[in-house]
Structure formats: C-alpha cells, structure tokens
Amino acid sequence: MSTVAATDSSARHPLWRLWHHASDHRPTILWASGLSILNKLVDLAPPFLIGAAVDVVVEGDQSWAADVLGIVDPRAQLVAIAVLSAIVWAIESIAEYAYSLAWRNLAQTIQHEMRLDVYTHVQDLDLATFEDQSTGGLMAILNDDVNQLERFLDTGANHILQVLATVVFVGGAFVVLVPAIAPLAFLPIPVILAGSFWFQRRLEPRYTQVRDRVGQLNGVLANNLGGIATIKAFGSEAREADRVAAASDDYREVNRGAIRLSSAFVPLIRIAILAGFVATLYLGGVQALEGLLAVGTYSVLVFLTQRLLWPLTRLGEVFDDYQRAMASVRRLLDLLGVAPTITAGTRDLPEAAPGQPSGSIRFENVGFAYGRGTSVLRGLDLDVPAGETHAIVGATGAGKSTVVKVLLRLYEVESGAVSVDGVDVRELSFTALRGAIGLVSQDVFLFHGTVRDNIAYGEPDADDDTIWRAAGLAEATDFIAAMPDGLDTVVGERGQKLSGGQRQRVSIARALLRDPTILVLDEATSAVDNETEAAIQRSLALVSRDRTTLVIAHRLSTVRHADRIHVLDAGRVVEAGTHEELLAHGGLYAALWRVQTGEAAPDTAAATSTVTPDGPAAARMAIGAVEGQ
Image 1 (spheres, rainbow, N blue to C red):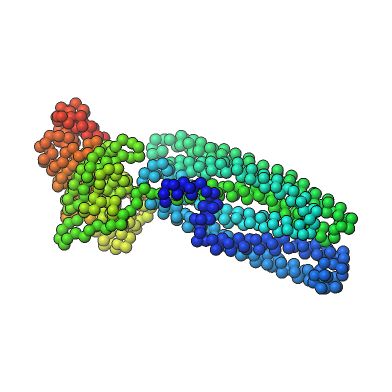
Image 2: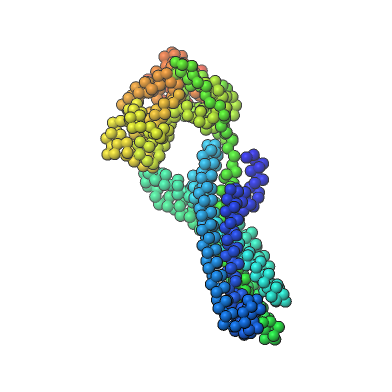
C-alpha cells in the first residue's frame, strides 16, 4: 500500500473501511441484517393484532377482522387472531435465534481474523516501526480494540438495524392509518436524531483518547511486569505502583469525560419522546371520542407510538458502543495501513559447487543510521570469504551489532550494498536469507515452553537425538540432564528459570540445530563463565569448520584464532588482520589487547601513550572494552 493510498483510506469513515476490509463476509452480514429486520417487523405485529382484537370486541361482526378474514362470528374472529398471534410469536422467536446466531458467529469470526491479520502484519513490519510503538500499545490494539469490535458486532449492529426498521415500518403505518396525527408522532424524531449526532461528534474524540490511554496504561503494566526483578532489586515497588496509579487515573479521568457526556443522552431524549407520546395519546383519543377514529385503530396507534419512541432511548447506549467500536476500528485499520519499507526479494541463494563452501559475506561502502540519528556505519567495507571465521571487535557504539542487523535485513542500509554469495540481500527472499543464517545474540530470548521447544525452535520436527547433539555442541547436555524433566523442563517466560549462562547455551544449541550456512555469534559467550566459555569455544571451533562464521566480541581471547579480525571504530573498519598481525601493527587492537591482558592501565593516558597517531581512538576502545566486559 502506498503512502498516499494509506492516507486516503484512513480519511474514510471507519465503518466504510470495515465494510471494505470484511468483504469476504458481506453475504453473512447481509443475511444477519435481513434476519434482524425480519425479527423487528414481526415484533411490531402484536400491536396490530391487539388493535384487531379490540376492534372485534367493540364492533362484533362489523369488525376489521370480519371484512379481511371473512369470519362473521366474533368468537371465531378472536380464535383466528389468537392463532395469528401464535404464528407471529413463533416467527419472531425463530428469527431472533437466527439473527443472534448469525451476528455472534460473525463477530467471533471477524474478531479472530482481524487479530490474526493485525498480528501477522505487525510481524512483517520493520524493526524501525517499533521504535515509535510500545509493546503495551500494540497489545491494547490486538486485545482491547479487537474485543471492542467484537462486542459491537455481537449486539450493536443489530440494535441499529432494528431501530431503523422500526422508524420506517411504524412511520409507514402512521401515514396509512392516521396521516393527520403522523407528524405529531414523528415530531420528536428529528430532535432525537439531531441530539444523537451532536453527541456522536463529541463522543468520537473522547473515545479516541480513551483508547490511547488504554494503550499507555498497558504499556506501563507490560514494562513493569517485564522488569519486576529490577523493581524488586531497587526497592521501587511503591514508586512503580504510583506510576501505574497515575496512568490508571489518567485513563479513568478521560473515561469519566466520555461517561458524563454519554450518560446525559437518555434523560434529554426522554423529554422529546414524552412530547410525541403525549401528543399522540391525547389527539388520537379525542378523534376516537368524536368517532373519527376507530377504537381498535386508536389502540394500535398508542402501542405503535410506544414501540416507535421508547426504543430510541437506547440510541445513547448504541451510539456509545458504536463510537467505542469505531475508535477501535480506526486504530486497527490504521495499523494495518502501515506499509513495511523493507520488502522481501524473490531470489534464492545460488547452490555451491560440490565440495566448495558457501556463505560468503561482503559489505561494500555501507552507510546506515537509526532514524534521523547520527550515522552508525560510515562507508563500511567488509569481506568474509565462504568457509572462513572472521571476527568484528570494537568499542561500544562502534557499530558491531548493527552489522548483524543490516546483514539480516532487519534494517535497510542507506547506501552501499550487502551481499551473500554474490547476491544483494535486497534481492533475496527472507526465507533464503534468514534461513541461511544462524544467529546467537547477546540478548537471549527464550520462549515460554520446554527446553526441547526452544532448542528445536528453528526445526520443530527435529528428533531428540538431533536435539541432544546440538545441546552437546553448545556444552548444554550436563545441565539439561540434571534438570528434573530433562528436555521437558519448562524454562518460564523469557527463560527466567534458567541462569544467564544456561540461556546462552540453549540459544547456541538452537542456532546450531539449524545447521546454517552462516553462523553469527553476537557476544555469544558474554554470559558464561570462563570454563564454559572455553568449552563452547572448543565446540565452535568444530562446528565452524567449513562454515562461514562471523563472531562479534568484546573479549579478544574468544576471537584470537579467527582467520581475520576486523577492528571497527566510528562505523568503519580501521584495522584488519590476524591476531598476530594486529599485535605487531601496534594499533587499536594492540591497545585493546594490552588492556584486557592487564599489560596497560585502562585509562586514556596509558592508551594514548602506546599507540600513535590513533591514540584517541585506542583510548575510546580501551574504555569501551572495559565497560563491555
């Protein structure tokens, strides 16, 4: 969807946008609407039958029923009216059951599909999109807004249709039966409608604010629940409770404004309804006393007036539900209207020649910045031949992790090109590109489930032997076997039941299980102890053989055996070579090595005194290295 198209679409009324979005369900919507109207029509029949019965009692064999049904005996006329009443009630009951079934099932189906549509769309959005979206806000849309739409379709749409059917049908009956009194009966309706639209215009922005406050409140709750350990560690329970209270109170106050306005609707409308009802009751009664109007017809008018006007008191409740639903629909469809800027290509990776490794990586003059911020990568050139192990080191903020993000196309480069096996990543499908890369990130995320589920996440059909083999390569078999349920042990939300090192090893096993062409380790051993790190390094030396491996690390001891080490500073490679070559060069890498091995004090003076003219950069790297350990 283009930006212009999205803008034009968002300018349309939410109900029209929903009708367009739910085009596959239009036959069901029309069927349910027809049943609602049928139910209301037969629901309005009893007043006519009551009027006919009164007419029989008053007129006897000269009644309306005698003329229409051709039945002379008044008792027989009453029997016929009673039978018709039973038939009408049966039809009404069947129609009510049918429309209730149709609307509720439709509401559930659209709720289900809308939630899946929005969630699937959110998954396809760029990571940059989430910089301006809170998790709580997205959860409010996926849960609260979808549920609000479901509630409206469940009952609100039926109420609106039945009110409209009542006005049209009863209005026609008044015009036919007593055209002189009809204007008086309908006199309140323009007032009611004008008041309804007045309230609607003022309620709409208020309910938009209500939905926004829900998102903010959910954001605070989600953030606090995710950081509950930090809250406890810093003794901030009272302060965070106050913050939740403030967000909840803000939501309550905005809701109160909407409630005050919507609650005033029914009392004001009742006054207009009373005027119409009293006018019909009095003037119709006068005409009946003067013989200008049959008693039975007068009975019909009184009942129909009540049937016409009193349901209009529910317009306030209906419009309240309607405005809440439309605010939710707008948020849902606006989110669906956000077009991803990073779209998948169509190409697959070329097949490597027999016996030849694949997975070469090349960065050519790559430039990148997050949003409107300062450039993170500035003309980055990087060449990783297939089958080799290369490392990227540098101070915090040098752009190391950004290299991984643009390689995976989680973000799009602003200039230059990134290619895998000679194919620009922008031309590759996401399945081809990301399926060839196994990522072990410093920020490990485990899903709530078993150890088996998390290790086999990339290959759900993997058997236990394959899972244990991957766990062995990640040095994870001992702690998994020691758990009460082994592979079936539940790790908890985000893996909170495991230690940091255990989570890291499960993450490594998850990546290795896929047997990727390219293995990317972004600070993969940052959360393990020295002994485990050494064991993992031995395993990685085996699994990286004849496989392209890109290692990002602060600890230089973990990359000293790499085929080539690239030193990043300010978004570009300033040094590259083997460990021995870089030490002999005496530049940034050598300064960082001396800091980590304790050969030099980690301060600016020491760092700048050992290497020139790159002293300031070396100092930044030295300090960054100490901070990152």
